[in-house]
Length: 183
Image (cartoon, rainbow, N blue to C red; front, top):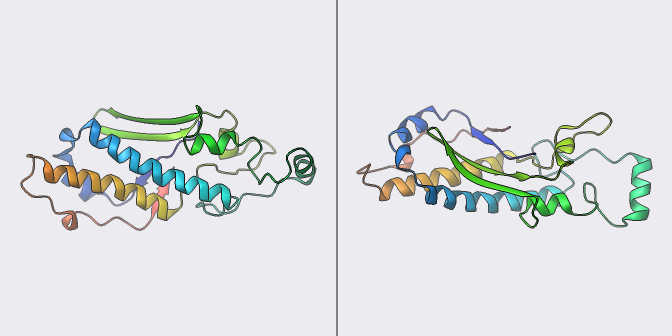
């Protein structure tokens, strides 16, 4: 099952600043973050499919092989690359039962998961045999930064309301590195 996992780099100082507050993070606060993140991801997924992969970090998806493209155009006229029945895109924008969304805590870390249970999506995500890689989840650097900043803003906002800290200064925390890795 393909899911989004974003990790910011050079966040040691931010993690250190937040470590004394992390025990106070509530499930509700993380759910609020998840709702904002899901909106960001859904918007990016629409752009990704609309652009034939061009909006993703790895660029446009490889073309269909000519034989399959001819078959598809006869049976599913007008359908773009990576869209046959709409099942994958609908799951990635939360419009089907195949969508995966969860918020949970394991140890001292919170996880927000968004993805799809469409069985063939994993083969497109990584490629398999003659099937080339056409990532259905492929956040670019801008989207990854939006996701990390959405979490950071919620955490800081929650910290400011908390009795754990007398004062939290968002500007004093480590700047987000401009480069994020999507894993």
